[in-house]
Length: 407
Image (cartoon, rainbow, N blue to C red; front, side, top):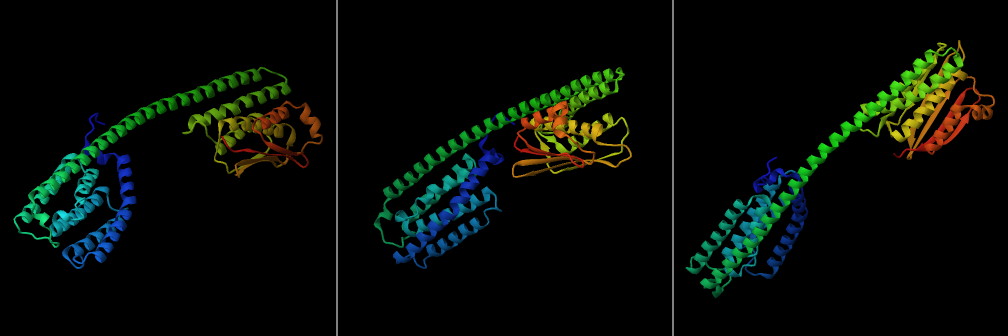
């Protein structure tokens, strides 16, 4: 982008175009209605107006305004403004030719350069304004030498001083409006240019922060993987099977957190975890590491929630880690079709989650929960995410819980 801001390039500045087009479209119908009312009133109160050349000219221009309004969404801004400028110029010239200095539409001469500078640059506007002044001067000359006569007898139309004064007023008024609007356009372009430059800088900073956050998640995931790897090496040096399983549970807890950072590292939004992928991957890792007895276990997931925040994803990942581990360790038996189902849905700003297995269940759940580190962790994490929950421990195990979905 060039540092030099040239007004002819305003067509490339979409925000300014949008503002101008919106203003034009909203005011066009109002202007057409007012012009129609003026046309109707003039038809009734002026005896010389009806079926005069100006009468038909006004009808054509009014129809043109309504046509422009009807096709406003399809036509570009410049085309619409150019059409309106032509209609206004025709109305101005028609009235001036018929009535001279007493024309009620002399003020339209000021509207022409105003509309022109909305669509074009200062040079084009000055050319159009010069055309308006020249047309006014030609008509004034024709009136003064008697070539044109007003439809309303008025000796003032023969006065050179009056035509000169009127022309000067039109010139000065138009110049003031053009200069003010040109300055306004330049200021707007300057503001938009600064905003675009700042937006470009912010995008650059955002990209840097995105790369940084991505790298942080990647390093956290790698560091957790190193810790879990060291613990797994320690597990290999332990002869006690129960202690091995306890250590492996700790490894899986770390892996469940590492999986969150892995998914965030791979995601475009670093606060949103692709939830189904996360649950499926985590479950497969836990089943592979904890199913030392090679039990026949079928895992199913029915997850409607697409994404979950990191604040909810880490606790829920650890919860499922504890539940799957307990199912494998205590709930399932060999030579049986063992199943685990995780279902998650979202309704009315609440996420509803269910974990269930078809294992043996838990006879004395209160006693088992009070003496189990895993259930203590689950209870603490459910409180952390502000979840309401309930257990079913007969004919299998089932935990249902609901928590707010907001991030």
